[in-house]
Length: 325
Image (cartoon, rainbow, N blue to C red; front, side, top):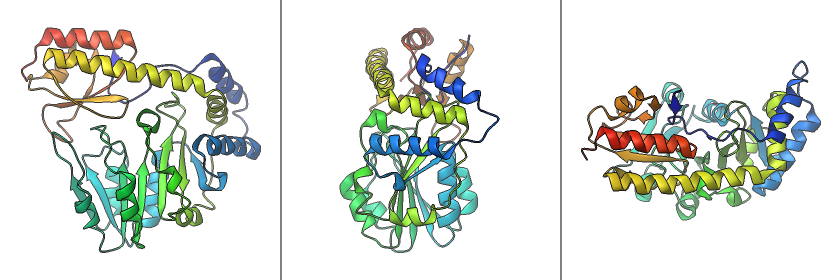
């Protein structure tokens, strides 16, 4: 059986109670979701994030929300993004934007120079930044830099916090003060809902005005599973802890082998190896990881954290194929 460690998914399935909630939703799949259930989910997300419900917009996946932000706000603004940044909406942004600026982060530290970012803000801009960054796992922007950015009245800052539960870092507390801040979140990663697609946006006042009539079209299985997940967050918390523990173990083992490992704050590991055909050799053994050569640099790979048995197989294969680093 093929092991897939290339999509940053949560390797742990839904708990029985969450699965039962999704099935209950499936039994109502002939009906549209009811407003009271949508409101219940927003209230639970409000409690989870310590954010008022009126600052929350729901969607089937955060990517749809990011696309909508680009649709609404890119017309008269320059889009600023970080490179590398593997947003699924990156190609969409390239098509929609009349002006786009890429700020490069480079190995080995992958630091974002705040001055480079701030120097780009002399004209109306829309900044889209993933924090932690995908594929490096690096925290790119801190609260001090975010505040400096948001003091520019013609600048919008959108932070994708898809890996918040793994990094523990968020700008949610800044929403009340800064109207031009928005935060994209997902329940696909930490909550194991990738197959159901559950995303949401936390908004400052400026974004709230533009999203006041955004349609919420959640399927009942997604809605019910998300509600039950937030009612029983201990399952997610336990899985995140297991993933992070496995991540530390794998990193240590890879370093012993001689693979270069870059520290990150997500549910994946960025590595570098000069072993020829490294990704193909793993694939030939029935294990898929993300080869970053096509979109970025040769020799770099992103590995999602799996369950212990999958991770053991990964390490075993790597030990057999050599490591010219």
